[in-house]
Amino acid sequence: MSVFDVGVSALFAAQRQLQVTGHNIANVGTEGYSRQRVELAALSPHGPSYASVGRGVEVVGIERAVDRFVNLRLEMRLSAEAEQRTIAEFAAQVNNLLGDAESGLAPALKQFFAAVHDVANDPTSTAARQALITQGESLADRFAQLDARIQDQRAIASGRIRAGIAEVNDLAASIAELNRDIVDAWGRGGTPPNDLLDKRDQLVRRLAEFLPVSSVEQSDGSLNVYVGRGQALVVGFEATTLSARPLYGDPDRLAIGYEQNGRFIDVTSLLKGGEIGALLDARTKLLDPASAELGRIAVSLAETFNAVHRANMDLDGELGGDFFSFLAPSPTPAADNSATGLPEVSIVDVGELQASDYELRFDGTSFVVRRLADGAAVASIPAGGSAVVDGLSIDVSGVSGAAIGDTFLLRPTSIASMLSVAVRDPRSIAAALPIRAVPADGNAGDAEIVGISVLDPTDPALRDAIDIAFVNGEFVVDGTTVALDPSGETTIEANGWRIVIRGTPEEGDVFSVGDNAGAVGDNRGALALAALETARTMIGSTASYGDAYAGLVARVGVETRRAEINADVQARMLEEAWAQRENVSGVNLDEEAANLIKAQQAYAAAAQVIATAGQMMDTLLGMLRR
Image 1: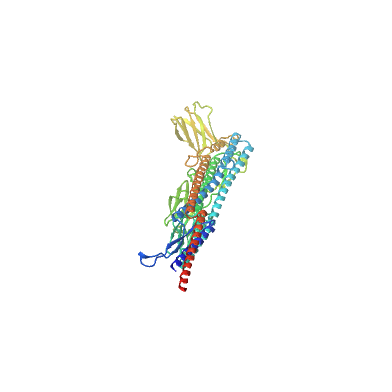
Image 2: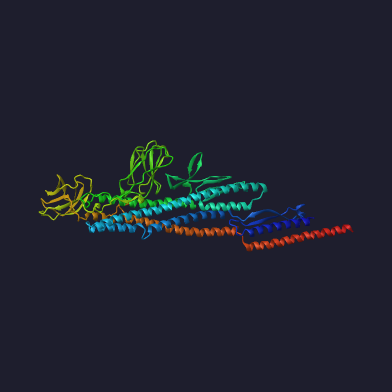
């Protein structure tokens, strides 16, 4: 009978091996399936150890071929690859948009200033003036088109964030449900439910594509899952439901968090990496800065061009008005603010503007100004006070009843889509200077006027006639003396204008400054406008409009190339991680075929042992009958 028992145990073990081998072969194409193997052990013998005889074999378990560290590496590579692929995708879109030789901003700027030069070449030409208005409108349209396409990408990113969060919630709920099933199955059978474990691992890998994942297996077989920088997503049988909520009423500026006791807990800062982290970064590090830089160029162009145009004179002898107009967006309060009223924001130094939005947050005593482009806290404004920050005047005296945590979003350069041409009549284009300065006919010295400009077009005495006389070695202007500059160029300012006299005058020499009315052929104002094309009016007087745009294109191009390289590297590393996982856990049909033959032969041999035991029993019984 002992031989019979040994044969039966061997037959059962071989049968189980055949079953598991067949299960492996059947699932060779199943995504996430881990190869299984039968664990065998010899049955404990009877009798004293020195005279014991084996009792056969037993199946002690069916194990998955899984390496936890290999799976962890694969999850990390999935997150990294999804992150870099997503960043590269959006960077390429922005790079193609801004760097296009025909639809970018550079050709529109060039055509606009070419029209300014045409007016300077013939300031009496109505056609040239009308062409300047048309080119100004085309430039404004180009700003709007570029910004609109950037906003389209922001909308796409926001839509994918919402869809990704919904997918994360579904995956989290499924993992929590599997935790329950795994704990129940383990409790009933005492053995690991391998197929359920594979399914859970596959869900975790899918989750890793959206956000970096870390997990801790519990003693009961459940798995706690954390995403990003430690945000708990699944704990036991419970899953946290995340949601994406618009900030400041902007549907494309999202915060991610969850509800707790009726409060929204913002965890956006914890969600770094993966596709969702990349989408958040694409918004804050690529799309928002590109839009802000485009807006900074637009507002700088409008402010500086308008300033010169207002100091010029049109064909009707009137001082120029604004050539461009724009409406800066008002500060936007957070939805849950307690405060009433809004801060006032105005541009005081266009050259110091930064390509960034700002957050104004009340800390109980002061409003802290944080520049969103780099996260730096750049100022603290006492309640009811004001400050100048990055070329902006911020006045919070109109805000009352603020509570700790109240915030406002400031978008001072988000005007690219709001730029328009204010001038409609070609005659209103101010191409001449409103004043002129001439030396008297009887001047004996070699001094000459080499520069004249308007400092303050609002000065009521700007166009009043006034003489500059050289008396006793000094210039006398309306009773005020100005010393002769030893350098040979003397600057004189009065009545809102400035002139530069070069050379050495003689005693009694006179220079007259007065109204330039009727000088329709004067192109000095148009030349001053044309000079703005290359003037370094931006970024602390270090860059022109074209320089600033070229810098933006270069930065996006570098970021695009870096993202593409990183995406390629991560894709190769992900392939290696998958290959390593398949080497450990994948089903090899050649190996399974060999295992199948081995199990078949073991089954046949076990059957032969049982048959031999039966023959022995028959022989014994026959002997007894005789």
